[in-house]
Length: 310
Image 1 (cartoon, rainbow, N blue to C red):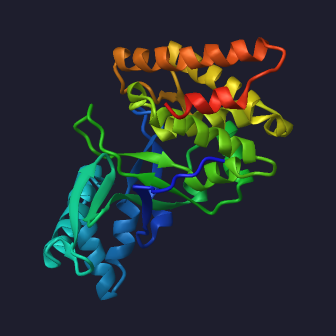
Image 2 (cartoon, one colour):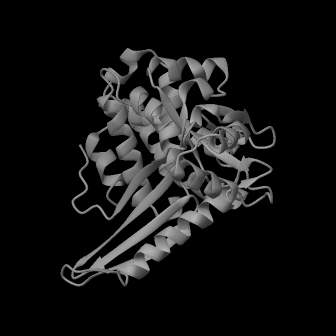
């Protein structure tokens, strides 16, 4: 097993539960696969009729966060950014413990706090998520099967800014808990180890900086769907050989479909040169693994580990 001695990056998803969220009308965004639109019309009506003071305050806030009654990504993120900034201003961007300083920045949907102290630096990505009920999902039948198997009551919509559009009302669908259930099923240890190993390989190769962790995770989600459960009982070196071959082919084609909506190409935001650079790096290692498979002794764990350390 791979162990990280000093982790320096952490992710934390915080759920935003809107009163009467079950009344949000969720529809697929026909212009952006994998995304949904959140129509707040009925929620605003219910809040208007709710006499409680806090509900009226929430309604006023929501009115400032919608465009034509659709919850807006940019307005929501601007509001959250103001909350983070004001909070840090109040504590003068520092924690009274060994002089630890805090720095705030945003990247994509995440609000990142960088913690700096004596011999210490790490960052925490706080990712907002709109909580939605299971019945509100707009998955195709095939993907819905895996969501139902996880027996979940909720899923999330992430306010991920889109660079290629001016109408910021499109939220990315997120099924983290369903993915977790798929990856942590019975006899899935080699699946999780495989993900860790490929991430480690990515981390030691400077030309794989664009290979996001979620791309690797997605690759394994598709493999889980394609294979029978006993596949993951095979030796880890065999699984790694298969998965590097799968990754090589995805990069060769420049196509990695989002598991929950295959019409979305997750590599689509990268340039052809960026994808080609990753392809060449992964292809070399994949070819080496396949040559090892052809040897009588099979893939040597030492050969694999050497590639993951330099």
